[in-house]
Length: 285
Length: 332
Image (tube, rainbow over all chains, first blue to last red; front, side, top):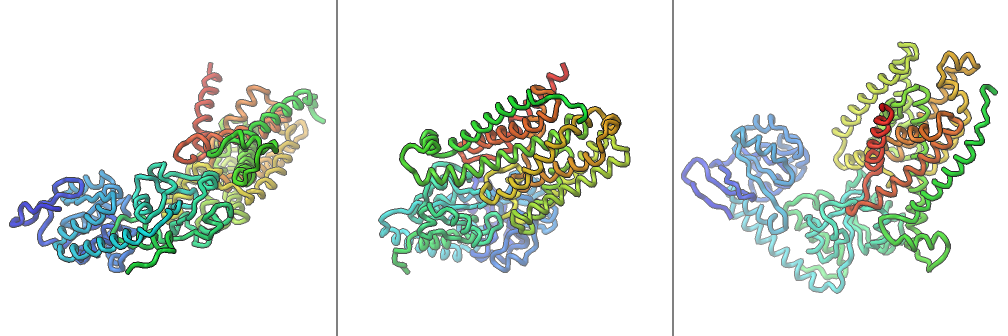
């Protein structure tokens, strides 16, 4: 939730997800989003019109792809941001460097920092963006739709008898997976799966030797890993028919963008994952 | 034959001891890994105990190609170091210092970006890269009449230039390929498979050619004038050795990336132990370099708890302090 302390003044003072006070101008017409997921979510809550700048990999939605670029989220072009004269910048703690945020603030540009670490906090991001853009009603509607979909998934999973042991491959060369402190881990747990990388943290590396011993039931491959095509990604696994997932043809390639960005599209990702992991479950509409 | 000394009294025991070392290292490489119990793997090798299909695949389809690749790469890199050090009469010469590795890395990265497969595409583009650098370095040194310092200096500069090109290529590459290239640059043997076979076939003749030129190499060490006075065709021998060593290095670079310090550490240690006769040093370098990288790779893939690391990290962690120690002893 946010606090409106000085609504009568030129701006409001909001508290960002890190608990810092941020001055937000009113009306808000010039915003620069510093990560692709915040760009996506801004459009979702109806704030897209206020965006005047986005980062290099902001490809979704189409309207975002036409906006001026201010570098990539890891290497921001501060000069370009300043030139756009934004009233506010939107950043994430994981994606953007602390130094760039401090630099922007020193230049008099307020930065609202998000730090979504769970699906709940992703939903909170939507509420907060609705508050920033003053599109609260639209944000509320989105949030209740999200909750409904999440409930539906929970209902659906009640029919699951045995959770499949899943290996999620984020990158192909070398092979990386997602440990217990990541988004993807939460997503796997929520979709009724056992994450085989849960005994490690961060994004651990795996060797084929370990994978042969782990014997995953299902392997989910993020697309674009190592620059390989879908066929190549699968072919690398198909060399090992001893692995149950290979033997039972349960190798699935999924859209990396859908899974890598902490945005509400993660709910799409979750539904997609449930469909792949539990083909036996009836679809609940 | 010129300056014939019966070296075989030394060569035979040295080769036998070092071969034994290599066999032991390879057995350790086959039986120890990130998973499974080592005892069971020994039993599998000895043909005892219950058959375990997974373990069999791990030992024969994963560890065996990897041990072979590590041995080949280790042997090539240390032999490459030895050849360059002798030709340039400079203890710091190494495929890396000369820029040959850097050149083949540029060639290989261009190949990766162009989407070439490992063989023949990548192998070829990497060899072309190393030859281009070698040519450039030789031309640079030619202007100063075969002075080995200018050859080295030229190599250092060309290497710095290659480094800049590599960084440029990485920064313009797609993020999906970046990870792959960065890990490959750190030196990585995890891609070992049956595809690595052409590497073996490619470097074995190189080993033979270099071994056959051991005696001219010995004479070259006494100086170019005295070598040619003793009947060595200096220019031809140098050209053949440089080309062979570059081919060997580029073959290994495109399979395993940049693995440093092997070509510096192994020849130094061996020269201290065995003296400077290349008829003994060449086989010793091949065998010791092979054992060394098999053991380093064993550490790289079995030590960390968060997944394996690049073997280049291990060779640098072991090699750099050792090298500093050698320098220190040499000073005193």
